[in-house]
Structure formats: structure tokens, C-alpha cells
Length: 258
Ligand SMILES: NC(=O)c1ccc[n+]([C@@H]2O[C@H](COP(=O)([O-])OP(=O)(O)OC[C@H]3O[C@@H](n4cnc5c(N)ncnc54)[C@H](OP(=O)(O)O)[C@@H]3O)[C@@H](O)[C@H]2O)c1
Image 1 (tube, rainbow, N blue to C red):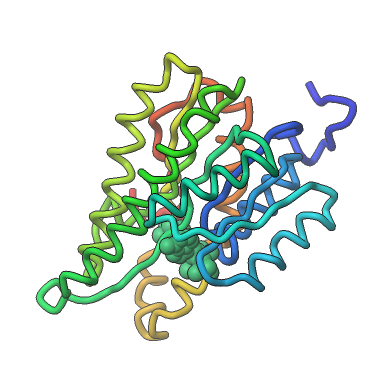
Image 2: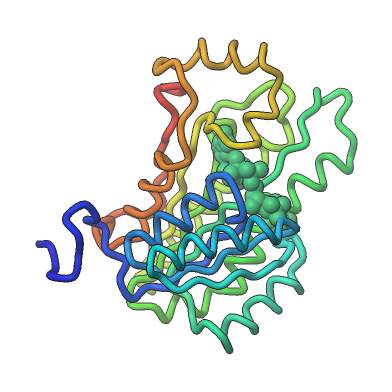
């Protein structure tokens, strides 16, 4: 049933919910912040270095009529994440929804991959998920509708040339999601993952054009996805409508991995 204050086009109401989205200064994270706000949530836009872009995201959220905060923290640094939590506790309150979105890649053939390429990707993509989830766990457990949504990747499911480090981190997120989902059932917290295929953000636009063309030819829908197509799935998982789903991995990949 649609509530009086809920627009018919926004069935996944997040009214009264507070969400933290990591890596929300651009790309998929930015769109997740805008979409969750569009569904009624107040949002925290976390970022690492792109202050101006993060401010733009927050301004757009505010123009849409929702409250937003921006906070810089390198999610691979547990201490910085703890400081973010202290700051938010005082200025924003406790969060209900954590979207572990921030991620990086350092692509190289394994033979040429340096230890620092491995360490960097694992520390942001996997340690970052640990740091944020661990730090905000108490908030989420206390929420009446606690949600943890992790952004994995099709590459964590099927692997990809030149991405041993990235694929390992994204496969790790799937294991993390499934194990934690089982632990948090007793707290009424759901833990799910979204595994996007190739989505038109800077991460994909930086791939050489020839390689992009080759990838597209392997996608049954013959195009890259849009950040909105991932963000709406996240909004659904964040909402009460996904109440019987936990430990799942939702694929948003245009049929790339069947
Ligand atoms: N694009 C795709 O095709 C695709 C497909 C599957 C999965 N994914 C995943 O989706 C997520 C978003 O990807 P995207 O394409 O939107 O990437 P993007 O455009 O490169 O944006 C990455 C975001 O992560 C933030 N970030 C990077 N390192 C960080 C750190 N140490 N601490 C905090 N924030 C950090 C960046 O903040 P700054 O701007 O401040 O650096 C930025 O906001 C990633 O986890 C990615 O692996 C993407």
C-alpha cells in the first residue's frame, strides 16, 4: 500500500532512514546516494579525495529535499573510519543502512602484478568493507530495519584477465556477505550484495576503446549498464520490501554472466 506522503513512482520508501554510502563522490556511489535520497533517506556521502565532487553530490541531494552530509575518510584506514563514526554520531545520528560501495582497481597481468598492486586493491575493496561494517555494526543492529549492502562485481563471480587482485577482492565480498548474513539474522539485519557487470563510470570509461568494444560484444544486451540501474536495486535491498532476502547476490549485468 502506498503511504499518503509517498510518491507512486517511489515504491521503496526509505522515509526516516539514515544511510552511509562509501565512495559516493562519483560513479555508482554518487547515484546510490541520489537514489536513496530520492526514496526518502538522509544520506552521508563518504569519499576519499574528491571533495568538490562529493559536495556536488550532497548539494544535489539537498536540492531534492533530503538532508545530506559529506565526510572524507579513506576506508582502508580503520582509524579514519572510526573518526568518521564519531563525527557522524554527534552530527548526523546513527545509521540504518550501510552501502559498502567504494572500490578501486589496479589492473595488470598477474605476472606483472606487484605486491603493492595486490595490497592496495585488497586494502580498499576488502579491508574497507571490514572496517566500515565493523565500525557501524552497533548502529545497524540497533536499527529497526538494519541493512548492509555490499557492491561486489561480476568479476568476483567469473574472473577477468588482468584483474586477479580485483576479482579476489570482489569474490571475498561475496563470502563476507553470505557469512555475515547468517550471523546477523538474529538482529533482524539483512546483508546482501549486488554484483554489477560493466557500468558506464570512470572505472569503465578508462578501459581502452578497443577493449570496451570487445567487452560489449560479449554482453547479450550489447551495452554497458547505467549507474541508475544498479542504484535502484540497492534502493530495493535497503527498503522493507526486501524483508525476506539475506545473503543474496543480485546480478545487474545485462546477461553477461548466465
Ligand atoms: N563501474 C563498473 O563497471 C563496476 C562494475 C562492477 C562493480 N563495480 C564496483 O562498484 C563500486 C563503484 O565503482 P565506480 O565504477 O562507481 O567507481 P569510480 O567511478 O571509480 O568511483 C569510486 C568511488 O570510490 C571512492 N574511493 C576510492 N578509494 C576510496 C577509499 N580508499 N576510501 C573512500 N572512498 C574511496 C572514490 O572516491 P574519490 O573520488 O574521493 O577517490 C569514488 O567515490 C566499486 O566497488 C566497483 O568495484 C563497478
